[in-house]
Image (tube, rainbow over all chains, first blue to last red; front, top):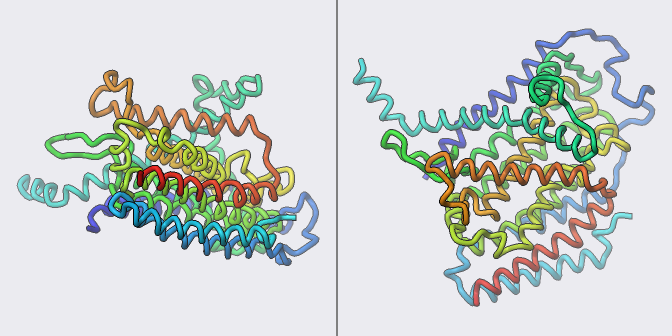
Length: 118
Length: 343
């Protein structure tokens, strides 16, 4: 069962090697001239005026929460889709209802303005 | 002595074949990135009625390789207030996930070599589609970490935008792929391709193809959905503070993801290595791989074509398009696909 993942595991090791190798190589090979001004964060030639650690739009949280809800519902659909031929009409009716519930949820969020970016 | 060697080889044959395949594919992927950069710059040049790079090597082919060497010898500047560990981890995560994702993709029919059946894929996983989705979505971590660790407001904004965009379009990507799974009844990518031996899924699922490809363009952060690096407003988005090879690693990740996405579209919708009307022209063993590569090449050209045709869309439009157009259409497509399959 797990043998089919052998190749993926070997690829994982190679990928770690490549990624770490590149980061290490660029840190070693390049010139190193450090001074205070160069270590400042980039802000179009100005010194930093506002801290990056400020509040940002709550919409990003909302999108993350909605994503979790809809993605979990999408995960339920994967086994259904694989077995679709065997489930026949029963599977179709069951999942049609499930998709309608999903659609109503989306419609609710839509109507409440959860998807609007002003 | 020879007996023990052959004994060792035959005992660990799976492991050795796997390692060789993984190494070949990793090297091929890495070396295809400069070629893709070259292709993009040449094509963009032609689209904009100019020549593009043509000085270094034949047709300017050596230009991206020269750029790579230059970037490797540039100073790796780490911004003073940045989180050092995460700052180094972020580009590594991007490249790592991009390479591992490709390991599940089959790109040719299996053939026999020295009495061994060899499939041109690193791993033939029975839930290959889920594997690809799972690993490729981990690439978001690299971008979010880069945005957070840089301690720069442009990077943070870019990282936030990118994460919201990628998770929004991932829903459409998954739901569009479900249409294909209903048709083929398998999550195994090899079986999905073999199922399309007569008719490719693009004919059975045209809407799913359009949704999947559009979501794929958004998922790889390519124009017109390249909001995370909108240079006019965010300097360079999440990789503003990166220099040298670490900067190039984000691009490598992006280009490898482009190849992977094109390969996924080929596997799911364009019939993989099936050549249909031109089957009689295809030689054995190497033929299917060439057919697959040709389809991927065409899709990559479409990626570049899109970039030079469409202006970048506004961020609110991007999000509302994802949630109000793409997602309902994907659910609708799933219902229609189910309806037609049950008839």
